[in-house]
Length: 380
Image (cartoon, rainbow, N blue to C red):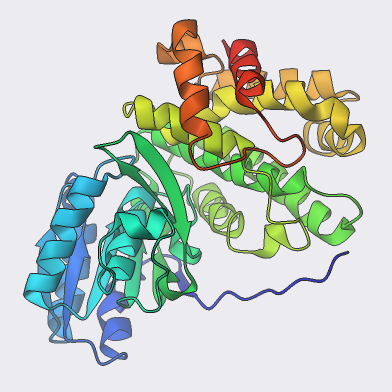
């Protein structure tokens, strides 16, 4: 194994009836006013909003509400939210929602002391400080509740880029799986696909890191089993909890130990897709791209892809592993072709060019424009 550094400072409070602890946790930091960032309003329907605001009021914490974060959160809304945070002189940001809400909250927290939001993504400004961030998670998928990364779409320039800073690790994240029981099943499936994708992005970089590889294989098998069970019984708390914890573990550092920073070619290509087609959910793009990418690059590193096929999918070839994964995605209801997303071949060049805007794509194979188009053709 290569040398590595591991650090994750996020305090996780996990389990039933834990959301009401958020006020106490924020109060313990001496914070008296927060910006609550939320999405479309589902947190009012599932009781999360009431639990959060009751807890804040119990501990005398004032709050300003900002609604309207979209899936694939956008720069213009983030700038509006940042303006409110500054005007109201909040002391922290509380994200109540899924990965999109948390990602925008991280951008607000980091940009609070920056000249502008997008400078963080263009790397013309490096965050040296951020507002404290707290989260109450309502959808498990991105692991943004437990890491220091965030993604934002510049809706003026059709750029979906990622950023990272140690200053935006949440101070505390609360994960109550019971609030995810009534999610539309496609959101649960998307969460499972996104979680698998995060693990695979690190896994395929492996060589002889037996401990990390074995952890990742166990997590992938558990995600697959959890989604299978939840497709049949969405109200099953134990499988809901297992999926939620797998989702957090997938991108909090332990799956990436000694894995060279991960591959993330599929994420980069998918970011280009959902930047140009905002209606495409991130996980939908990933469920289409991953089988195609594996087919395209697996011959360059056959031992690790064969191990994946055997230890995760219980088959004896990479081709069979790809087919097993696609069959599973189909069973869940996830798309496996670009045609299902209404993306035509004449758009492939534009997608490839967008993916390459911020430099090289891929580590197992550095992908040029034609490589990306070839992968998209396989995925068609």
